[in-house]
Length: 119
Image 1 (cartoon, rainbow, N blue to C red):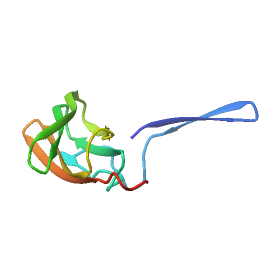
Image 2 (image 1 turned 90 degrees about the vertical axis):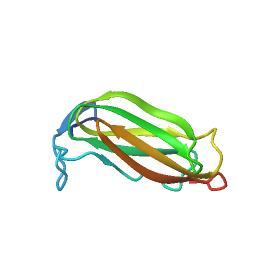
Image 3 (image 1 turned 90 degrees about the horizontal axis):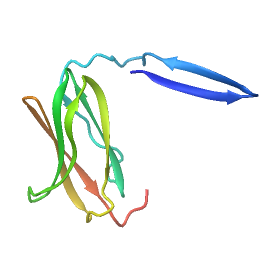
Image 4 (image 1 turned 120 degrees about the horizontal axis):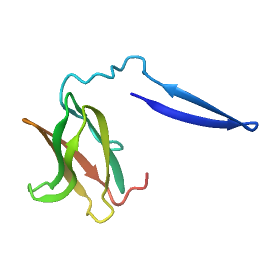
């Protein structure tokens, strides 16, 4: 994981490069789809996924009846850790499933959109 940050203090700009995080390998060994956060959510949530090699990836949203409601991402991605934000402002409250298809792997997880709650 690489993160570039800059901080302005007393007229100077300091730049630091984070090249690793303790306890977290930057090498992905398996396909993985993480639980979204926050969950439950209103109106947006973040979905993270990991790819051990460059892959064609699709991330789609389905309702409880199995009807496809949205495609969050469809395209090629490089190996590594990635995230996509689902803005569900036009969706009704309820339970939804998100599905990641990457190469020959399919992974599914669920989330809850709660319109009455403020986070």
